[in-house]
Length: 95
Image 1: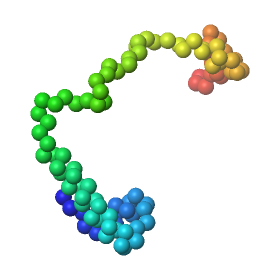
Image 2 (image 1 turned 45 degrees about the vertical axis):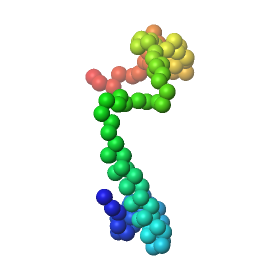
Image 3 (image 1 turned 120 degrees about the horizontal axis):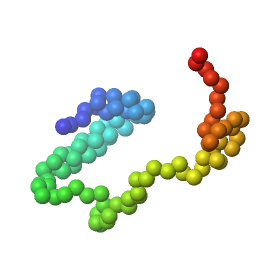
Image 4 (image 1 turned 180 degrees about the vertical axis):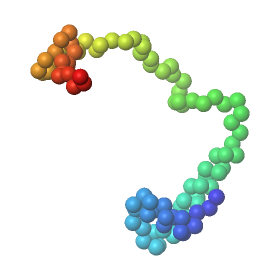
């Protein structure tokens, strides 16, 4: 895939980047070079290579999946005008 001058100007406009004509011509070459490198990556044989999240093997830190109230219920409702058993009391709105 190659990028032409019109495409560079359109992308610059969409990204709200002001480019002069000479800058747009320079960017055309640079973007074509970047896309060439990306196309080369598609030629690499990755059969049998597992995806990785880091260059060094490490176990992900996990937390227990436990439901708690955070022990902050009293702090949360402390400034409320009316509460009952750590719940906010509000006026009835539906008859």
